[in-house]
Image 1 (cartoon, helix red, strand yellow):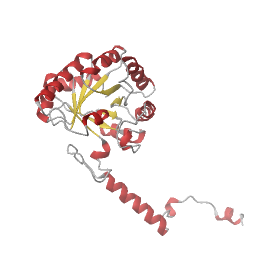
Image 2 (tube, helix red, strand yellow):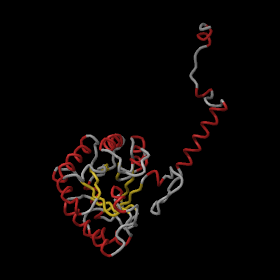
Image 3 (spheres, rainbow, N blue to C red):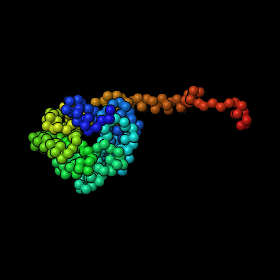
Image 4 (tube, rainbow, N blue to C red):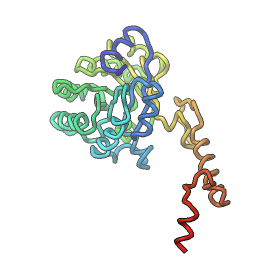
Length: 275
C-alpha cells in the first residue's frame, strides 16, 4: 500500500510508529522501499554522504533534483520527501514556492522539507497554498550550523525549549504536514509530539516521536570513525562490502576469477579458422 500524508497521519492517530530513512540513488531507494520503510528522505545530507562536502551548504537545487528523481524511480510504496537546499527558500517566499515546485515537478517528490522555525511560517503557508506538502525541520538545523557554532543539541534551557514548542505549533498552523526534530532532548520532544496533531519525526530526539529517521550510511556502518550519539548500527554493511571487494581483488590478481563458469563458449572449429 502506498504511504501518503493521510496514511501517515492515521498512524499517528492510532499510535503506530513509522520509519523514515535516507536514500540518494535508484538502487538504494529500491532496497529501502522493498524493505518496507514508510518514508524515504532525499536529504541535503547527500552533500556529505555522496558528494564529499564537509557540510550541506554547497548543495544546489540541481543536486537535489537529480538525486530526488533517481530515488523516485526506485520507489513503489514509500512516501518521498526531498530537502530544499540552502538558499533555495531563505531569500523570499516567491523563491520558496518556485523551488518547491521544481522539486515536485522535476524531482518527483511527494513533499518538500525545509529547515527553520516560526520565521519561515509564511514560506510554508505559501508553499502549501500551491498544493505542495511541506515537512518542517526544527531543533538542530544543519544549514544553520555556522550560526549555531557547530552541531549542538538544541532546546536545553527554558527559553530555547519554549521557543522550540512555539515554533512547532506555529509551523503546524502554517500548514506543515509533519515536523522533524533533530538533536532535541527526549523529554522535550515528547512534549512537542503530544502538543501537535501532525506526526513528528525524530533524529536524535528520543523514542517518543511518531517516526524515526536515520542516514542509511550511519545505520549500516558504511563509514568508520565518528558515529553520532543518536545512531545505532543495525548492520555492518561496510565491512561486508570491503570484504567482498578484497576477495574480488585477490581472486582477480591470482587468476582464479573469472573461472570457467563465468566464461562464454565458442566452438573450437571456429577458433581454428581464426589462426
